[in-house]
Length: 39
Image 1 (cartoon, rainbow, N blue to C red):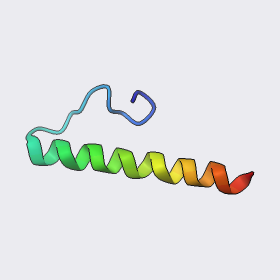
Image 2: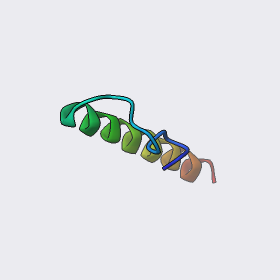
Image 3: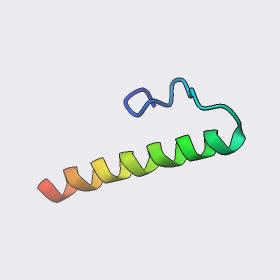
């Protein structure tokens, strides 16, 4: 939550919030995938 900026969403409105969360989820999954691939 904190590492990907979800502690505080600075974008206003529900559509912006959904986009903010979606981009954070994608960033987390890419980082997880990169960690798994390096092992």
